[in-house]
Amino acid sequence: MRLTKQTNYAVRMLMYCAANKDSLSRIPEIAKAYGVSELFLFKILQPLNKAGLVETVRGRNGGVRLGRPAEKISLFDVVKVTEDSFAMAECFEDDGQVECPLVDSCGLNSALRKALNAFFEVLMDYSIDDLVKARPQINFLLGLEDLKQVPAPAA
Image (cartoon, rainbow, N blue to C red):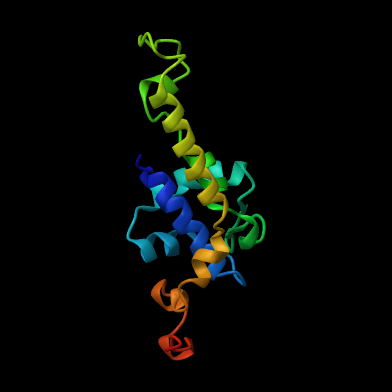
């Protein structure tokens, strides 16, 4: 299974907003920090906003901020909003076109479903806050502050 670029950058956008928690974040700044197009980030912003993961503020001094505290946004919350399908095999698809005679009694289907549920459980255990706190120099790395203000990593 491979997550889409949309999910990858949605997580990154949320991390940026969490690291920049005292200010509104602007899409051009986020795009520059990650080296991605603004248009792509605007596309990702829509489902995140609709799901309440971010809030947007319009106007000249507008921007984006988290819709709820970073510790309350799990990776699973992001993945379920940004991924279109979790079909790991043909038998996971809901289109009624499965041609396998074992579809209702296959061990593979059961094993893959169990693996997918385990994947979701791990994603539920990690928040955006966890990802930000794991990188003490994240604000410097994202261009949010000078290196002088960043505490040195503990030895």
